[in-house]
Image 1 (cartoon, rainbow, N blue to C red):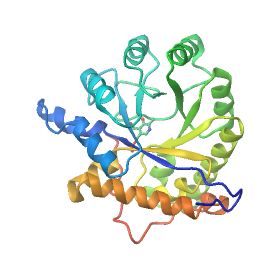
Image 2: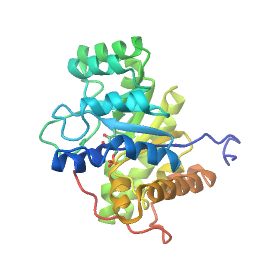
Image 3: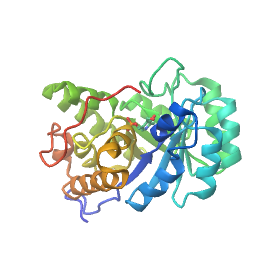
Length: 280
Ligand code: PXP
């Protein structure tokens, strides 16, 4: 594939977040459904990697899930975690391909807002360098703003994952002007981060209807998507949901240019409508 702007198209990977397979399992306390089985199925359907968030309260993914994922997966594991000593020790023990550091509050239903990189102080710095020393690529989950990108570079991050939650919330509310502004902010942040030498990922709240505008941003090389795909799996199966999302991503990337990336999101007629985004 060729990019209209600079004649090189970067690959766009899909990372499947399997947290909510564990949410359903934990509702009954047994072993079913198994997040590892879901990960294998998603990979067979075209997912390029697997993401799991080991939360401090273990509300979905467990320590043993992480051990099994790391041991048995055939694709890279991206471990999302808070920048705490407990999580650092787990990461260094299992050595996932990447760790994405996220802000975490016990009361929140999902990760709300990006990491305060500039205000992260000595602890964030220490966690980033310990992960890097262990050979783990470090990603920071951030709001799409230039000051936070600069702070991420200063901290030595390899990757930034741009938070698409605000864009997806606005899309659900159907506010075209605000959607266009937020898409533009994401596109400019992707360009800025790439120019600063960071690998650029994005995610949170993405659905069939919102993915194209983000997938069209040529600097972004990975999207991490969970809740919507696991929800869609109820209706058509996980394999079908993953492969349809991959198709939408490839189509948007093939047509990608900056004008498309900065245009407002348009609901896709071909795709099922996105349900109202849950905060779970
Ligand atoms: N990226 C990060 C850093 C996240 O914390 C999450 C949610 O766990 C996601 C992506 C996936 O978000 P969603 O489940 O809404 O697709």
